[in-house]
Amino acid sequence: MGQTPNRSTDRIYLSPPHMAAEARANLLRAFDSNWVAPVGPDLDAFEREFAESVGSQYAVAVSSGTAALHLALRLAGVGPGDFVPVSTLTFVAPANAIRYTGATPIFVDSEWESWNMDPAKLRQTLEFLRQTHRTAKAVVAVDAFGQCADYAPIRQVCEEYDVTLIEDAAESLGATYGDRNAGSLGDIGCFSFNGNKMITTSGGGMLVTDQQNWAEKARFWSTQARDPAPHYEHSETGHNYRLSNLLAAVGRGQLKALKSRVERRREIYAWYREHLGGLPGLQFIPEAAFGQSSCWLTCVLIDPELFGVTNEQVRLALEDQNIESRPCWKPMHWQPLFADCEATGGKVSEKIFERGLCLPSGSQMTPHDLQRVAQVIRSMASQTVVS
Ligand SMILES: *Cc1c(COP(=O)(O)O)cnc(C)c1O
Image (cartoon, rainbow, N blue to C red; front, side, top):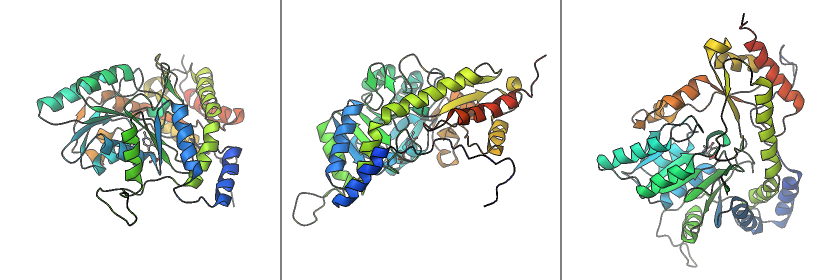
């Protein structure tokens, strides 16, 4: 096929799948064993190995991160008429999952230290709900771009208001908070293995918890809530949310590579900082002192006054060189879908959206790829000649 001018080099994607050789071998082995449905030895082993790697007692493998979030909310007892505080700076999945239960999201702004849920604003939100005689049974805190939220104060607020804390760790697999792993910081943790996450199984998710009854219930609901009987007997609403054994086999191979994937993404973040950190008006997503980010996506904020051009102009210049980049999450309180929902604060997430750009961060990026990205960004900055 013909190539357009300016696009003579391979496309650099934001965060493409990075498949481990062992994942492929596992997939073929599972295929040949005929355990191709959502039941089998790899599914059980993937759950065990994943729980161990996160440091949680139990893991339940499901078909997506969104499914894990939906089950987590149900476990917390969330239903019609409830209000669920959730980070506003996020991919839409947790807010959608709240709606699936019939509850209403109420959006909580970020803090600058981590770009994640501001614990003080969470407290305000729960207090506001209490004052207005509304119930909150759960909070969903999102670890955006791979960095944990500040869970010590968030936990404390959740305990005070007696709500279940759900950690959306879809982007932070492999990150830490103090000596704990992302996903184990709330009462329930949710992960995603979709194509652009830290590890992928093509599609998939995981729910982790230390509560055995919750893990068993989640597994029960994820397989259409079939009561024990020789025929099909049902007394609760279930879902078809279970992960295929084939994809669990892929997941086991991918999980073994996780450590090296995190190392590489952290190197990429450090590389960008080292090579672009000095540009005026360019600021990197901070790494909070409380832990290590998975560095899923390296994000920058671009101040057009100092940098000379806007984040959108940089995005278009990268696109022109066949390099994919993306604005940071548009806050949920700004989405048409949630126009009727309440929010606490919003200025921090709005600024991150207005100025932010996610740079290519895939764990297979080469030094040459990084140079290509940096070159474009440097050339844009140099348009402002500081006299
Ligand atoms: C990707 C993602 C999800 C959803 O994962 P799926 O597996 O695509 O359903 C949930 N929350 C956040 C923050 C995500 O980035």
